[in-house]
Length: 296
Image 1 (cartoon, rainbow, N blue to C red):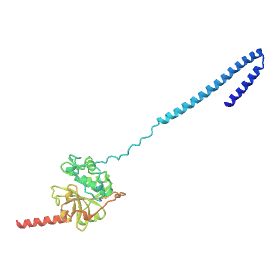
Image 2 (image 1 turned 120 degrees about the vertical axis):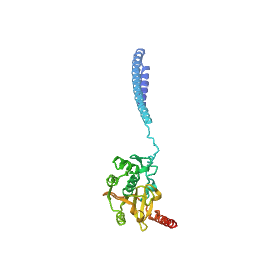
Image 3 (image 1 turned 90 degrees about the vertical axis):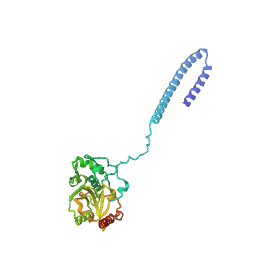
């Protein structure tokens, strides 16, 4: 552009010098020609300037649009991560840390749940014992007493006035990846089953738990003192008992084992020494009763 400008200036100066060397008539012709040429030149410069401005305007518009698009993009907001609320019926960390935690039918997590015409808290010892066996043998933490009680009622394993039927264990256990068989109630048979890592669900009369009617308990092991028992109805009854304390009161024994291919994976702690020893308490009570009978 600067070179073009200098070219026209030099040419204009040459024309002016030539113009001064002409006579009046020649000057008039040159003037007219100059005006005409000047008009053409101005027109050309104007056209070039308009084209340049238009191009610049379009470039500016594109830059503005690009800026607007960038500005309008909303960056994803980082919402704080929150943990899902814990199921109020879920087993506690303390329970899951034990190999054989005691579950109670009267626990507020499920006591008020319906069980047929009753509630879990009132008549749910059977489902609660089965829940313990499920947890002990399969690590299934979802099948809590409320879940098992609902299943039992829907499958007609509960009968009003009678309570939980034995079919909950012999038939229903399969739905929870367990297999069940009824076994004899003598001491050696119980120990043999426990040696094979079974869990025993036993219906038992009131002795030694001082309760009316039939209760359902879980037997999950033994040592030199006696058998390890969890009573779903009363935490105070959980402990070690000799066979003589409860053997004569057994009604049925359901031997529960994991279904084929099912194994435990939970990392747990089991300390038999920490299990309350109920053998001494019973012996003391028996001694006291004998002394009372002598006095009479």
